[in-house]
Length: 196
Image (cartoon, rainbow, N blue to C red; front, side, top):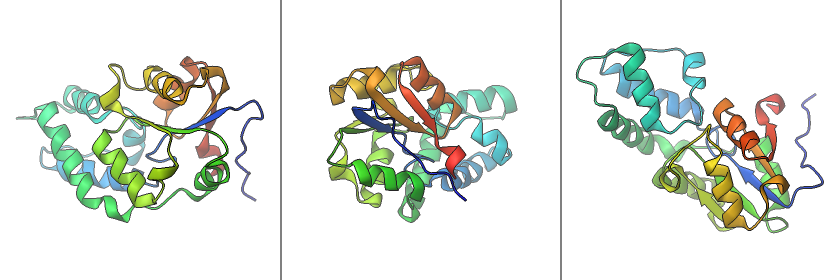
């Protein structure tokens, strides 16, 4: 029997990661990475991909260049190629049901923010595809902070926009960098992978 996802009773605001948490986007992101990086002779496993979940795509590409050492690989250019590839596939996005239920149960009852390592264009489109843009009180993306996950900046900025102290924010995350960032921000955090 699947465990039930719950909200801490001390919670005054909810903060959701988007990719892999609210939206089942990880397989699509993986395909986009494989399609683009395959052009440079780079292939990697699903497990390797998951190690970078939540880290903005720019720093991911820097890490891939250092590890795989591909020819003619400009991390900034390839990051744009990957995001464009993903954007073409975004319409197939479905919600992660167990998390989406919590989101809908609390929408309009507590302030809700989204804190993502993705860029604003993709995050906004994902929320539109899910049909929940009007239920979000704050959205913080990698475009809004100097230091992305696993730094706490994304979450702290989201709490600030929501007008709630970090210690009263309950974060739902699926990636290790995001979980580390939420903890570093002094927030309550639930690893949603335990409920899938």
